[in-house]
Length: 327
Image: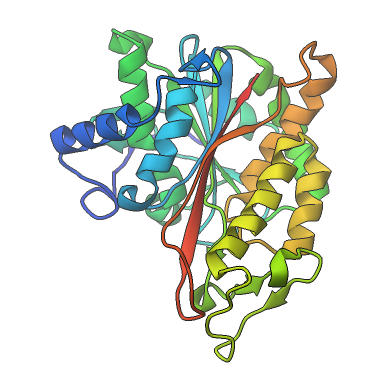
């Protein structure tokens, strides 16, 4: 058994987001304040919205989009937060768990739920995150200040603060995602738990080795742009990117894990958190047959943004999306 110890420091503070807690608090309050108080005539947070997808780029890029997911998130009954993110720092197959006892944020520490981490480890299905890679992993860290902020808005006493269960999700194929989804489904079904799924969407540009384009907005005729195709106008590149992302979001919203896997096979869209999304979709789908409400256990997207609007081949952008699911 791996004994949890030590604190993972907030390594991205002052680079990817403000390290000063007062400035950071004001910034997050501003992002959250810009989100409407209600969506589709439902006041936020959405009752029962215990699962969200939110981006993990620098806050100056993705912070406003992430606020939509976090303002939807219902933490009222939460005793622990499962945080699922992709690995950017090393190649991982399967999934990995933390060995730290705490995760630091500029606002204070989040306590790791050691009993749950150990219970997951005892399944034999999880690796340990290598410390230096875990310290460098921004897909997890970028959510910590938002989680802490929303916890303090929900609970009046630190004794009530939920614990954290960070899970790094590796490069798994569809059947493997279903297996991990089945393993996590009982935790997702438990009303004491909320799930935060970390993902950006399309990374477009030559530096990402992804320049897919839909001429005439025909997604059945995808091609890849080159330096010789400088400025296509039917549609503009950024509208083609939006179309590719919409296809991915539509596939996620179906609630069918296979639809999302098939979409990515077709478009090769560079959704960096496709595996955390896939595992969570598989868990939601495993629970859906017992739901009386057809919309339960399905993601609904509430916001979509891009870091820039690409017009020429030499440009690049990253897309961000926020969604929630009632569970």
